[in-house]
Image (tube, rainbow, N blue to C red; front, side, top):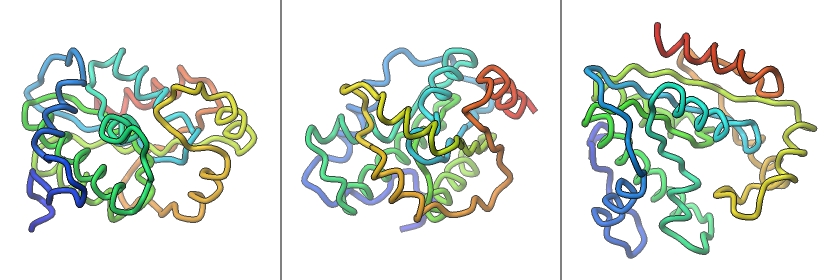
Length: 202
């Protein structure tokens, strides 16, 4: 199957792919207005570096729908195992939802760690196929800031990542091979938001 197909292969667990996709789309809530040319903002970064915070702020300010991988996982699995197969399925459903929203003309944020270039390549192809403007943002923060954020996460947060997960994932992060922004989220958030918004409007 081509990487460019809108519908990835069915995930390797016993759920109905189409039903899961419809459920996820329905749970997005009110969506922003469509545009003549959709855009896709992909966040990349380790847990605790501010991806979800900035995704929410940008969605409020610039009219984006958000596809959040942690939320997708929790919607599908009340007790996720984080197995390789489960994660592959979550990626496939996220990519399918991105493709569906872009095809309808929405501006979309993809909120996920996106640490592996192979996974990012699927997103590059989705944007190209949809004729969407692609903006890639890598979030970063000093380790002590990240540690404090992870320790302070509320119990109902969609992400289960803790300091041990952060440390393990630092070994897997790969360089981004496309032009991208790097944002230090420990600095002034308004300056970072403005930097991202300027890139979107170019």
